[in-house]
Image (cartoon, rainbow, N blue to C red):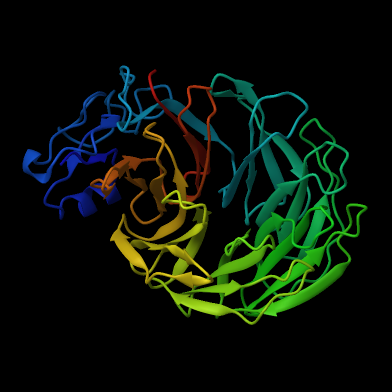
Amino acid sequence: MKLIFLTGSRARAWCAGLASCALTLGACGDPTAGPEDGGSKADSGTGDTDGDPGDGDGEGDLGDGDGDLPGEDPCDAPEPGEVCFNDGGFLSLGVPPTTVIIDHIDADDELDLLVSSIAASGLRVVLGLGGGQFAAEPVVTKVGLGVRGLGTGDFDRDELTDLAIANIFAPTGTGVAYGDGTGGFAPPPFASTGETPRAVAVGLINADEWLDVAVADESGDAVYVLLNDQSGALPDITSVAVGAEPYDLGIADLDADGAADLVTADRVDATLSVAWGDGAGAFDPVQSEAVGAGPRGLAIADLDGDELPDLLTANFDADTISLVRNLGDRGFAPAESVTVGPEPYAVLAADVSGNGRLDLISADSGADTITVYPAVDAGYGPPLYFYVGSSPFDLASADFDGDGRADLAVAVFGAATLTVMLTGAG
């Protein structure tokens, strides 16, 4: 079994306890290789088995001297199903990022990166240049101190991307920052949405086709629903009780009735809370589904092609991700959990292997890695581990370079950087 582990010193200690873990700077892995293959190195890239892993130039760092991702050899024409990351580079932000979002922020056709930090007063907008390239310096816009939750959408229908912001420090609350089309945003007024607004989701909650917002209040065990007044403002605020300490949330039509539903990942209860929507902005009392201990991240995606969204959680206290399959008729299968790196903080589903199936990816804040479970015919192949930097907190995915494969942007809290990981041929 080929395990790719682009590793730092903390991750190396963890890797040493595994039966099959290759300490390598390689970038490709074959998820169909069986465990009898042993802990071989990756198919491409520069391995380092002497001294500190990752110090390819002897300078005592994790690069080859240019500050980019470890490894100089690009992937060479990866086959569908092969997980392959090229050197996309580290982007220094100067502040520790907690959230990363991908969207069209300025007026061109290129995807941009939007980063918030709970420790800083401004958002960082990294403008896309096309072909998987990004501007060297982020645009900084001051919209609040301690932004923890972030969502994007055109709330006022002016064809410019706006932001829904949950601010955990004064002024505490949620507001909409309207975009100017160049990467700048107007500082918003904030409305009260509990003591510790933590996560934001954007969607069509009622039937008027104007984007609405939901905000998870961690200490209040509630979700606040903010309905759009059809001008771009969100004055109509109600709350829905959920499980203890909701850490993340999402909006999706989980039961295919045409109405948006809410789901939260409840850290203390180790549950998902599902609130079924009526299409007018109201919700039924929540339905709870058990997951692994300490869920901090949530993702919603149709993993099995049945046109019903399934649910994923990153379980920080259990070192696992849980998959809760949607059975329809408001029923869910018991959670299936798989082991990932230590202290996973975020999870997503994206086709990074290029075979048309959604792979499972976690940000492992305790091991400085991401874990990839590649989707194969019979489910998921063995896990692959990739170094991204110290304490990754969040993940986002899109095709940055137009090659048909999903690429990744990783918010690396401990290193105060974004790691961009491009898939496919170099």
